[in-house]
Image (cartoon, rainbow, N blue to C red; front, side, top):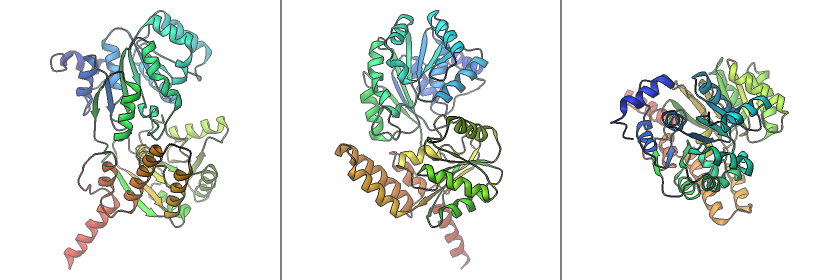
Amino acid sequence: MDLRDGQDRVVGALKEHFGFASFRPGQADALEAILAGDDVLAVFPTGSGKSLLYQLPALMRPGLTLVVSPLIALMRDQVATLKQRGVAAGTLNSGTEAPDYFATEDALRRRKLRLLYVAPERLADPDFLRLLREVGVTMLAIDEAHCISRWGHAFRPDYLGLASVRKALGEPQTIGLTATADVETRRDIVRKLFRLQPRIFLQSFDRPNIFLKVAAKQDAARQIEVELRQHRGESGIVYCGSRRRTEALSAYLTSEGHWAVPYHAGMEVEARARHQDEFLHGLGVVMVATVAFGLGIDKPDVRFVCHADLPGSIESYYQEIGRAGRDGAPATTLALFDPAEVRQRRRYIAQSAAPEEEKAIDLQRLNALVHLCRSYRCRRVNLLAAFGEASTRCGHCDRCADRDRLWRWLGRE
């Protein structure tokens, strides 16, 4: 479908189901290809409306759209929102209560669903695949598509079976969506997920409302606390490199009068859930977490993200700071840089059992992060360059701010 020819119908569906009068940048072009039946890989930044690329076509065409996502919380939230809008949607995952599970499976059998959300491991069940074949899948939408790539920052082995799932379902139209994929990761996604070359749609990786800062690590706890004083009453995330550090830092920040709670995979499930709810629904909560926290968390008013320890890669850094400022309002990031952590990370890469090609890419991504931290050039220019995007100095990072202050000072001489 050419959106220019069917624009009234498409915009009408957009207004009716989602309440929007127009598309966000990049959506219209990608939707035109999807509605025409093309396979698509969409690399759009966080908050750009990726989910609309499969939700709107699912409501405009007959048949079932199968959405694969590793994020149970996100699936649950999206399904709840769709149901509130009167859309026949459901999810089948390990967290689905028995009554909801049976009701959703019954609706699936009776071909009453327009969208079904599942985790990738659910598709390893031959009986479930057989049911999907009987029902018929019109479109296969793969969220967090970078999880299929070993070059990605969040590789999940369950995703490697999705190409076989696609074949088993009779080669339905396939779309992949991700917010974080550099050139190498995009190539890997195309190679492992699609039967033929898909149409690729890239939006700018830039998040201009986020102010980027890096500081040399001295006394990390004290430096983070000083940063948090500028955000009293605001919610934010502080990432740490170990579980022990999240506990210690959250305790210190609490002692300094901040509402700080820890989050890591070693905690009891109930405690993690309680702290996540506090963060999502409270005002001014600071989540002190390992990388176990963040995927699928949809909190638009996160005003700051700090890294008390060096992120794992330039991709991880981008993904994690992208949780700030999703509402478009100003947000701030601070990363503390310690050369000793870089040396430790390089040793880890060198001593790992990974193939040499994988080691080389891991080292390249670490070096890109180090360059961002050490270079006197605009932080945003360095960050976007790591994803193959050219840009000019942003005027919204600490390097640009230092340069502007210097020129103002020189102008007074």
